[in-house]
Length: 254
Image 1 (cartoon, rainbow, N blue to C red):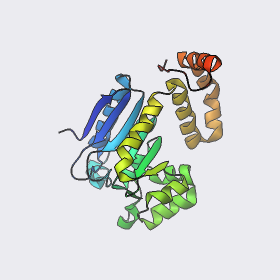
Image 2 (cartoon, rainbow, N blue to C red):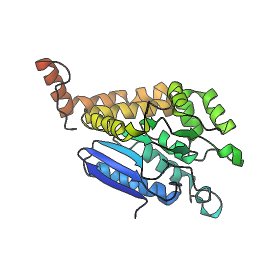
Image 3 (tube, rainbow, N blue to C red):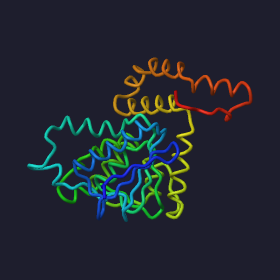
Image 4 (cartoon, helix red, strand yellow):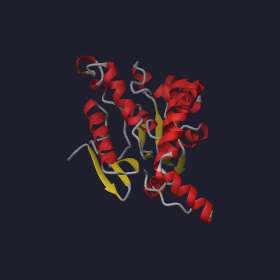
């Protein structure tokens, strides 16, 4: 069985992690995840739902896969891989149940929105092993919640419940565990039904701002605007608004 499976459900690409026992991350795992994302793009999906078929979302990184003789051959290759996952040109919803620890938490942070079961737990435990987060978790928590929370999570290496992370702005929504599949698919379908070009532009500008500040996003604002104005989505949305009011457009993503 593949450790990463992909299937298309309507306009949503379902990407399921299924590496026994707890989806430990290594280089092959990340490469296969990127292949699944690219398959969703190539198949015309309009949103991606990342989920786990195991007991936990992901219990962390296989440290041996990133250190010593087995570490990635070039740090720049690794950075390009994380960048490709984070900037796939579709909105990505992460559905988290069980534990999202270490690399698993960092993997969730590459998603555009995170929905968690109320029984889930999150944490960066690397410091307890004399390590630091290997997949960019510190800086991505800084992006979402500020340096104080990032230092707290990484330095103390404790587990946190999802309600706390929702308050801090690190995750988007907490639902009952039994409701997680329905709620996460609902969000993915809503995004898939939206104006694809505009959503892609929003994602691009948000990610640029997170990495390079407001000036970094401003530098791409005009280009992003022009792409949106040329799209059929914009024309259909505006025509529908003028004809019948908001919420009536059907978007096709071009």
